[in-house]
Image (cartoon, rainbow, N blue to C red; front, top):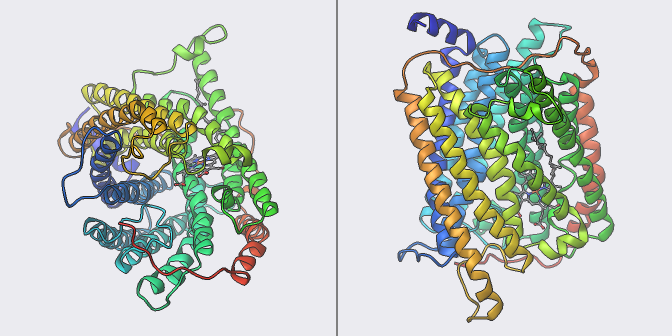
Length: 556
Ligand code: HAS
């Protein structure tokens, strides 16, 4: 294929201006990923007792850098970059000028916030971990930086909404493209969810860290954090689901199973992923058992859209495999394109999501939570969910998205290296997360530096597994180096040419999508109602019967 022809094809996918915007987001995402991966490897080796850190760097400092740069920066930048590109791809190839301007404004605010946060962590002024629990106090600049990241992401979200509004205006009476619908749902969830952490940071932590108020209501601050913290995990997951629902069917040569089911699952995620935050606080005193039960019931409800997603994906895989000649009960399985990294990486992510999600259901049960809460089991849980299922899907997306945006080709050598990278990542996660799950059940706490507790026999028994965690961390670091190398090659050096931006289509027999699914005011209203029911009275109580607040504490 000639370069001219490939470029014109490419231009029809996503225009240059949007490509630049998306690439700017992806650039920051993977820069943060690189630093965080190094921090992750160091902390896994330290906790495993395999190395000690040089003087001047403390364990909690690198743990904070790792959590903030991966959990808050890598994910948010990647997600927004991906959503902008997909919006353009599915709404005519370009974004309206207003959407792009909002996109760039959001990017600038988020970069400024990230730099402020990172500098304070590097200065050892903010070793408060990614949950920044009060009463540990960071430098005010850390909180201001995080606030800027959130505000920037709101502005970028308005850009997504602007692109969607233009499409609706130009196509009155039509159902929006599935990608656009899901991008709007994801950013809507984000806008509602971040209100909690914004209130916490603006009205509690910043004034307190500046010394304007002497004390902080600790339980209220944690409650506001988890109001945000649980939907945060769905904000990570929904773009992965977008890719599973929309990109994967095209990559494997199949069709979307059901447009309506996909949309309904996203509506359910908006409704049920926010009023559930108490499942992170089941062991905290100060919140009554009855309200915890309400949140647990809603938590089990939010599992349903994930089960719908699983059902839908199985259907796509089986029907596609059978259409390709797969016979018998499992013959279709072998017909899937296992040698294509665009499928292989997210597919491994999906397979790992089965035990990962099961672990989540274990966490959500009150009695079992008493066993695992604050143990390293929870760290194992989130390394399987976000660190494996979501991360592998994001890597799989990056392998085709970056060359599609830069007008380059995903070559067969890079494809093979990508598969190797996926294998390294998976082995690393299985070792590390497996050891974490096991150690958690033995009672090993999370969020701790290496210690043998004065050579206590129980703690000494943990050591071989902690070493396994360190070895897993080493595999993950190698996979990260390989990933960054591949992405730099795809962005700057791969041969010019065409890489498809895969967007699946509905099957021929697809039913008409019910219009109600696109009635956003209805879903926003219902979401507000559920939030008011689940949080209104408990938060009133937390304020009304607040124990004495806490002065700031610096634990490092
Ligand atoms: Fe979680 C703690 C409960 C899902 C992330 N979770 C965390 C923390 C993080 C996190 C970061 O109830 C730690 C926060 C901290 O620092 O303290 N979690 C759940 C539940 C679910 C769940 C019920 N979590 C996630 C996801 C995350 C994530 C997703 C990130 C992306 N989690 C908890 C609880 C805690 C918690 C408690 C607090 C613990 C404590 O005490 O501190 C559910 O949403 C999971 C539902 C998922 C499924 C799996 C469906 C499977 C699918 C794949 C199908 C595969 C196919 C491939 C089709 C039921 C969709 C097969 C193909 C073939 C061909 C074979």
